[in-house]
Length: 443
Image (cartoon, rainbow, N blue to C red; front, side, top):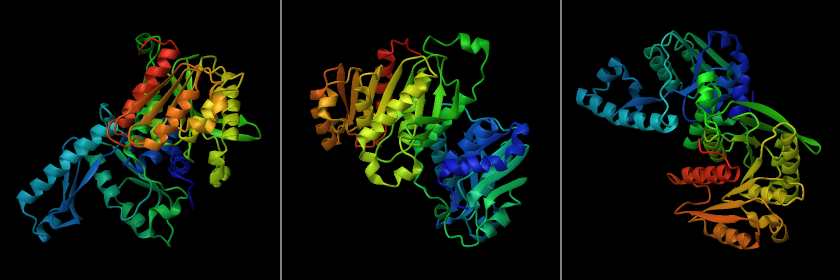
């Protein structure tokens, strides 16, 4: 069985777990790659999502050999047999544990962004990963989850080698695996796209899941400001754009509120971790978001399509009309890389009626100098200070804009804003630009 990507694997895995929906489970993703899979499972089962952060305790002179594992809440699991046979001194056990506890706390804090760990006492916990190699981490996670109070533990993965699958059947109350191929050498070979999952993607998915499953009560609704806070819900949509239908994720915050449409570039899709991180911040500010693919999977295979700005812009315009038929509020564009060129070109169309545009590390120059002069929507260009070539291109493009515009430079940031805090600055700048031009009260 071959999976398109982790989202595809998660959707398929969710179908095999439907029987657990009535148990009101908690879904736990192993970071990092297990979280995109777990997100789809939690979404399908209408269950809360969290991470299960586990740190292996390795023998000091042979780190790959684990003598135990630790989890949040002070959970510690030790193999006295390995400690004895490996002649690991008690001082070494304590030293390794202190080091791993610090890293565990750092990871958990980073991933949850201030939210509390979900309680597991008396619950069914579904531990999810994107695949199994040896199974050691997954087995340790099951032990940790049980020690945290879970009444029933289910381990679910898309793919695993037969020998590891056989061992893991005893690690949990139930083991669900979609495929156990005999010709197994690595998890990644069973995915068409097995690109690395970043911390930012984990943070964004957890934030989105938390917003989706937040309690909806009249009292809570009354405490919202005019801008709102958090997401009302996210739904998968199919958008008619010319002769194709494009997959997307539409998140609403308040009925009739503004929605920001994301135009991805350079071959990235609606699953872009950077754009999802920005979208999560916009949702927290009360803005709806629509992340969708401008190209079909078959079209993405031809890299030339990524630079067909006119086609991308027309599809964005078609998607805007589709959205306007469903959402009465103002619409904004957030474009990244070549997607920014498509956003500005679409904003230049006579019937665009776009409230604001933000470009992140974009190529506005590719929209065409003559068309840039026709853009009426207030436009914010955000560029990394270390992204010198793109910075020069943005300065040239800015000189062609006649609308209200601003160029913001994030000091020291490169093209993908991977430096610590860089993407947070992008999110803050974009949120301020959209809320100000949509005349929203701060959340």
